[in-house]
Image: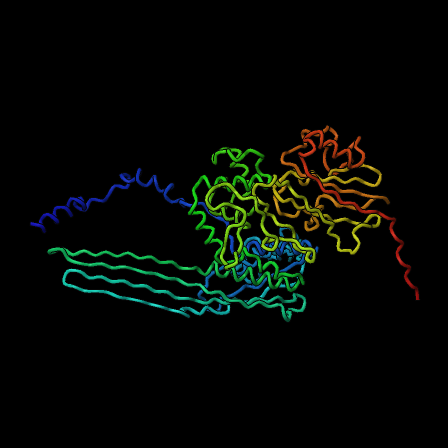
Amino acid sequence: MMGVALLSILTLLTGCATPMDSREDTEYRSYGHAANRPTSRPVRSISSFSDSLMCMDQLFRATQLPTTLIASKQIPDISTRVPVATKEMIVTALSQMSRLSNAFRYVDYEVDIARQDTVQNLTTILLNNNQIQLQRPAIYVSGAVAFVDQNVLNNRFDVGTSASRLETGYSRNRNATIIGLELHLGDFRTRTLIPGLDSANEVVVGNSGQGLDLAGRISEYGWKFNVGRDYTQGSGAAIRTLVEVAMIELTGKWARVPYWQCLTLEQTHPDIQRQLRDWYDEGNTGIHQGLITRSLMSHGYLGAGSDKLPANSPEFRVALGRFQADSGLIASGVVDFPTYERTLRNFVGLNENGKLTRIGWSTMSSEPLAVSVPAAKSPHSVSEDDTLLAEANAVPYGASAKPTRIDMQIENTVVDKTVFESGQQIFLSATLSKASYLYCYLSEAGGNVIRLLPNATNPSALVSANLAIRIPDWMSSTPGFVLDTGAPGTETVSCIATDQNVLPKLPAPLQAQGLTVIPGVRGMASVKDAFTQALGNNGYVEQTMQWNVIPRRAAPATAVN
């Protein structure tokens, strides 16, 4: 009887071999577009040494390291067990160490025909026609994933029982794999590796799993049950960590800066992200909202009294999005773990027992403690004997709002940057601590004022945080303008940062097109007065740089034989 019933069911399902009508599934398939999308938001790839890369960037800027062209060979995996794009990780690390300092610029040229793309083909055509010229790198990166020793440690445990109607089994395994990366710096002109500029590091990754099996019989029927838990530490994150450590070592040795200060930050502790995740899971939405809101207030992204804003308010989401963008996160405007980590990682230190602990915030509520981060534990602390490290980005919760900071530098590679000859080019850079509107003005020796930024070439005044703005852009083949010293006297450049686009609020002459003399405005004091009238005394921040212009010296006479 059971066989006849089964045959009848199969006959109904097959419809006597009639083809199925695909139109019957149209509505079902319409859900595919939504189901195909990821269910979690993308996050920025942040490693334990992301803060160290930013620290190196500030070291290079403090030492005024000139821009160096660098290239890289392909970084092969000798073991063929780590299929990752190691060369691209090198490019990313160099880029993150050059946001403020412009220390390195990567020469992107590929000679391997199999790896060439459309841009490479166009470059080759233009090179052959003498329409472009590539600049020769000064140094290059060479190396390889030297080895992958799998299962250096391997531990297995299996146990089970067997009876007439019940069988059980339990298993557990753990193993460790060591990955080694070796990188070197070479001199491009001689194609020789520079002695001492090498890095050979290794990291341990592993996986573990445990499982439980149950099987038995009830009367004539059998049943089986299996459950397991596993984790695997991937090779991608391991290689990124090795690459970042190697590039910090190599570039630090090459530039002769105290790079070890950036490798000893407590933010490089391998468990800091895991510990922050535990604290994140311990709290609730209200606690996270309170901590992050107070952080945004202390950094100037939110005004006083914003601690009562709901998480879905437009003001809070815009402020949080600006903070996320300035911090290198994906700007979602949503409180998530990456934002929580970036906000609070500078408020974590090691206690006397070597354990990670909170510094300056409460463990049980959203009310922070007014305790500042110890200078020795800050990722960018300053001491009297060490002026190469910039001040800490973090401020204690409960402190007053942190205004935008402007960091201006004269980038000319000369010893005395206070005196220049007439007609000599000046190269400046300006960096903002948070995304703001930036306006830069030049006051000539005679009193004429010219707006340098924004201008017709760079019409937008909105500038991202922690990104050096070159004035003019000397790395561009078409910089838009050049900045030459004029008549003898004192010249001044002032950069003003605001939280809003102030140009429409300024007097009509100051709204004129950039790179032209502003009529009726004499000296930098007139510009600052206009900003004060439009925004008030506390509505903007500014920084000024001056230099003296002297007559051009006569060229030395050439001896005639």
